[in-house]
Every structure is written in C-alpha cells, then in structure tokens.
Length: 119
Image (cartoon, rainbow, N blue to C red; front, top):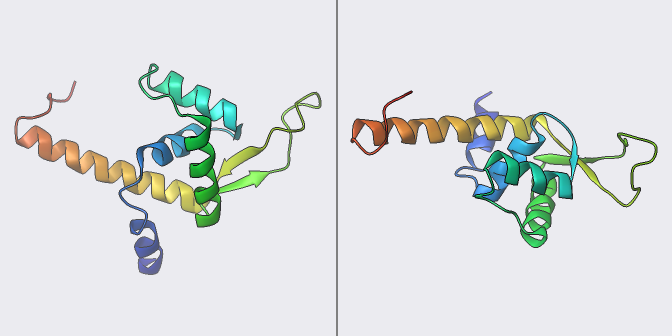
C-alpha cells in the first residue's frame, strides 16, 4: 500500500486539464469532444479545453496509466472514428489524492481568512 501511495503522490499536483479530464471520466466513458463538453458544462464555461490541450493530456494520461482507451461503443450507430476513454483504478486514486490535496489547501486558506466559510 505504501508503494502505491508513493506512485499516486508522484502525479501531484495535477495540471488543471488533467484533473478536469479525470472528473469528466469519473462517472462514464467519453470520447474527446464529450470530455470537452463535460468540462465546459461543469465549469460553467470558465474552462474550455482546446483539442490540442485535450489530446496531448490524454496521450500523457494513457502513457501514465491514468486512462485506457475502450473499444466498446455506446450505440451501434456511433461514429466509428471516435475514441472512447475510461479512467483506471490508478486514475481514480490520483484524482482522489488531488481532491484531498486541494481540500487541505482550502482549509489553510480558510484558517488564514482568505476563503469563505463553509456554506
């Protein structure tokens, strides 16, 4: 377990795009454009991933084992050119570790009077 923790911690802090891609894939497999749409919707349009940023990030995440490409199609009439991605167990662990890291930062900011109190 300690070995796994070290491996997870090596990814932190995550680049913003990487964290949002992991969030987009946490609930369901998605193709690239679906990830872009999910991130924009989740952030109320404050973050719009470009195709270049998305696919560079996905390539690195595939190499690092955070994502895998899946062959299953959600529908028979789906565009066969689309590539679908799924978060791995490692990707989930890294996303959870990043969430914990961000929570700790928010607690520090609250203690310093720099963040609003919990709602």
